[in-house]
Length: 248
Ligand code: NI
Image (cartoon, rainbow, N blue to C red):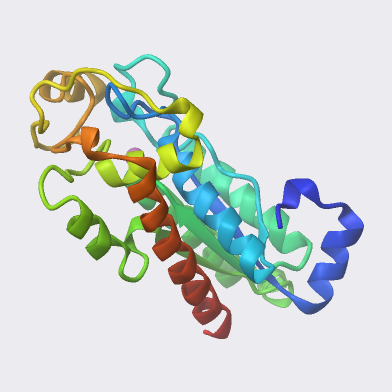
């Protein structure tokens, strides 16, 4: 169930019996010579939409531009400053809370989003803690979950790609995006086969250390078939994790 494909009457009816929503948290950034710029949106969105369809959960719009300043030396990458992201996400949460959503599950696709997303969630809790009047409004709880850290997903990724998994433009995220959009599968030479590893700082430093954009990965291993295996595992793990969050 996608929020975008519902009417306000349907959302109102949903809220009479259910209080939760899944919001995919993405990023628009380069993913090496063969990875799609939308990879970090596509992975959590695709997994969340399948889980939402299977378990009758509303899936909100994807927060599609995140914190990706380190990718800005590569064309097509877009970023929010951390302060902008905190402010925007705060407004997203407060909008949903306004209607009575009490459980907001963020399925994240990009490690760089974590600190800003956690800060936004803390801002929401701080508002309730500091404003006596706010304590009487809807009490919203948020959870931030990286899709690749859902139960048994990372172990599957490592099993499928024992060498060259790396940490950016990984074969697992590229495989998931290829399964979601087989019409967008790319091929390009990758040299070296496994990309270098190192720290992440500013955009110029990043491009110097990781000239083609990858970190430690060999995404030539990615296929849509392997992507499907990862998606299947992630969808059931997401439903389980979401149910546990509702019961907390
Ligand atoms: Ni990524």
